[in-house]
Amino acid sequence: MNFRHLLPLCLVCMTGFAQSSPRARALGVPLDGNPGPLDAITDVKGVEVGDTTLIRGEGKLVVGQGPVRTGVTVIFPRGRGDAEPVYAGWFSQNGNGEMTGTTWVEESGFLEGPVAITNTHSVGLVRDSVIAWSVQSGRLALQPWSLPVVAETWDGYLNDINGFHVQQADVFSALAGAKGGPVLEGNVGGGTGMVCYGFKGGDGTASRVLSADAGGYTVGVLVQCNCGRRPQLTIAGVPVGKLIPAPPAKATLESEVTGDVGSIIIVVATDAPLLPTQLKRLARRATMGLARTGSISGNSSGDIFIAFSTANRGADKEPGPNSILTVSNERISPLFQATVEATEEAIVNAMVAAQTMTGVDGHTIEALPHDKLTELMQRSPQAAIK
Image (cartoon, rainbow, N blue to C red; front, top):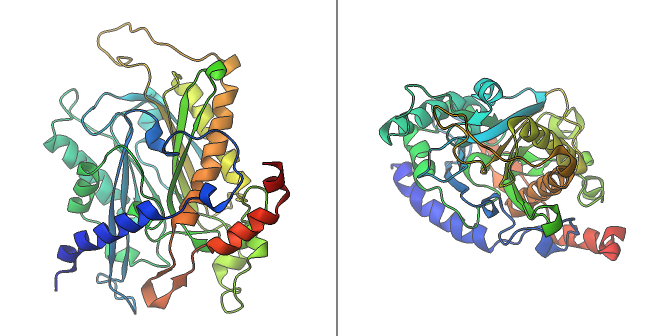
C-alpha cells in the first residue's frame, strides 16, 4: 500500500481538528499583552505559513520504513508571491542546532526567501528543495544563487529520523500551501514529532499589537518547540511541570532527569520599521519569553532565533541609495516586551494544541492535560490579578 497517497486524507482530518482545538487563553491561562485578531504570526500583514505533516506506520522502528512522525513548516515574510527581501537579524542562545543561511543574514542584513523548519536530519534536503522551488518559480531572477534559511529540532524519540522521510515533494507542498489566516498548531509540519517539557510539543504561534502611543505595530511569533524537562515547565508563573509530574513508569527517562536535551526554533515577525541590528536585538528578546516557560537553554539544546521586518520596501533596490525608516532605540522597548510575551504564549499554545502521540518502538508522549492546566490556572494568584 502506498501510504503517501493516503496522506492528504490524514492531513484533512488533522486540519479540521487543529482549527477547533482550544488555545491557551481559552483554557484560562492569564497571559500578558494585547494579541492581534488571530493571535498568530500571520497578524503581521503579508506573512504566510504552510506545512506538510507526515504520519504513518506504528510499532517497532525499521529504519527507512518508520514509524514516521515528522514534516516541514515554512514561513514567507511577504507571502509566497512576493520575493522582495526583508531586513532580518538572528541570534543563537545555545548553538547545539542548525539554522542555515544565517551567515549571509548577518553579513547582508537581509532575509531572502522563506524560513523553513524541519527535523535535524532533513535540513539538507529541505534546503536543497527550497532552492529547487525558487529556481522553478523564477525567484532567482536577480541573482544566480540562493542561501535559504532552514532550521531544525530533533524528533528521533517518536520519528524514524534516520529514514529521511521528508522528500522534495513534501517541501514543495508546504511552500505551495502557504497562506495567511489562522495557523495550525501542535502536531503539524516540522513540529509533528516534537516533545516539549516532557509533554507533547510542536508548532505554536501568537502575536501582540502595540498601543497607538507605542506605534501601533504588530509582532508575531512562531515556534517549533522541542525543549526543556518537565520539572522546569512554568506557565504564567505557575510551576506546572512540578504540579503535574511524570508518571512513575516514565519518571526515570533520560529526558526527565538530565540536562535540557531538546531544542527550539523561534521566528519573530514585525511590521515595525527596524534595522538589522535592531532585529537582532528583537531576536535576543525571544530568549526571555523562552525563559518565562522555564527553559535554561542547556548544553544539548539548540535554541536559535530569527527576526524580520516587513517594513522598508525597496531597501535593497539597486543602484540606491535608498531611503528607509526606523524606530528609534528610545522607542523600541515596547517591541521587546511584545516579543517576550508572544514567545511565551506561542510555546504554551504549541503544547495546548499538541495531542498525545505514539511513535517508534511504542514510545508515547502525553499531551499537556487541559483539565489540570485549567484547574492550576484558576487556583493561581495570577488569575486573581487578571
